[in-house]
Image 1 (cartoon, rainbow, N blue to C red):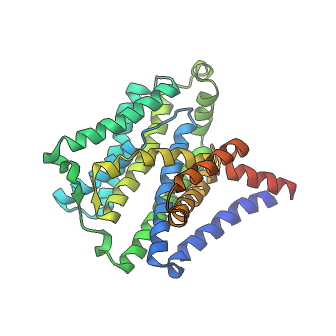
Image 2: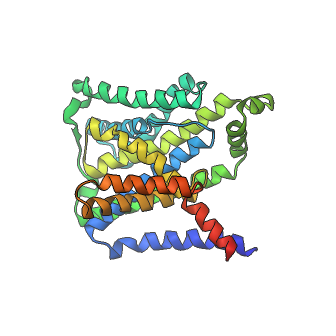
Image 3: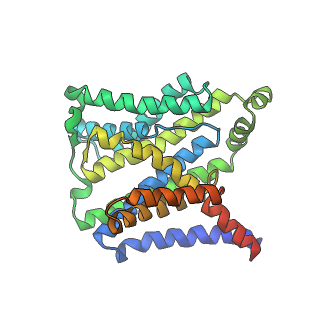
Length: 310
């Protein structure tokens, strides 16, 4: 087996083993940050899957919010086990993506970006204006996972970790499947792909549905983890923005890039918020601009360059 293959297998295995043992060494606050890292790793990876078909979404918060409200409302109505609510959050988010995808995926990428942004804002207003169903602007409270407490947070971490690993493995399997060749053909030249017998709308809707499914799952998981959700948190544009800049930071079109970006930007943002009380977002933005201009392939691309030199 070539040394490069060993490297590709060994590094993820060591990383997974390290993350699996991490809760034993972390404080409750640090563990909370790592749960957020896992959540953003799923969101960033899901957005990256959509980009493989040359589609840009500015409204991934819509699918996060659909998942969050599905999980919270279904639990309060029927008291199903949280695992069912989390799965239903992904399913309903995927259905929403299919509906919006069929309508909008024939648009140009820039038009789709605006349409998804409008979709997220429209859903937020709809939730606020239907208090009889969604509790409106007051939000929905649900019991925390495993009853709360430090032990519950450790179990919650492992759920977030499992969802993140499943999402990344799904992205890896998708990239090695025949679907990725169709995605790449659509990305490079949609008209040429259509002439080759590839249905662009079909594969773009497929990518959109897969992307929304995982975002909906972590949205429902987040509602159960925080034990409360409101429309401003569920459909926050910050979620959509982070979904884009994390793959750019780590390495767009790669499997590892969104994970690297989620890890670095989540921890970096928290560090800057604590150390720089005023204007930390300015420093955060300067760092992002530097990376985008001087590292067009992200940190993963930089690592590949160093590896080749060695």
